[in-house]
Image (cartoon, rainbow, N blue to C red; front, side, top):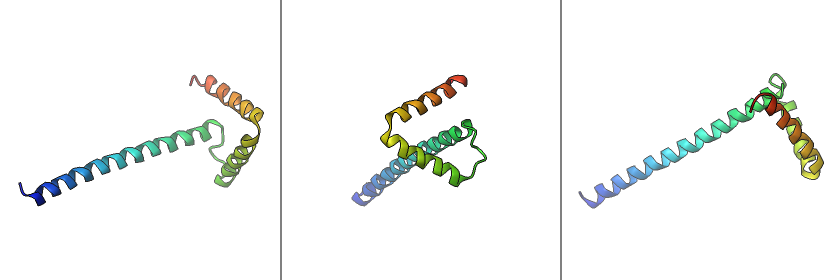
Length: 87
């Protein structure tokens, strides 16, 4: 096998590995988005407008940054909701 042929074969292998890694990362990201969407449904917010949902999340993020008590309170609410569903 010539040097050029070996280099082409090596390039092809690297491209396959790259595609595989990219595909795995894309699948992982897709799964995460589906799970996050499921949380919106579980919270009873499925039919709310996207702007409202984003506003809720931004507001919560700001409040959580400065208030560990609020973080604990909301975590307890979420844990209870998961417990009711057997998760």
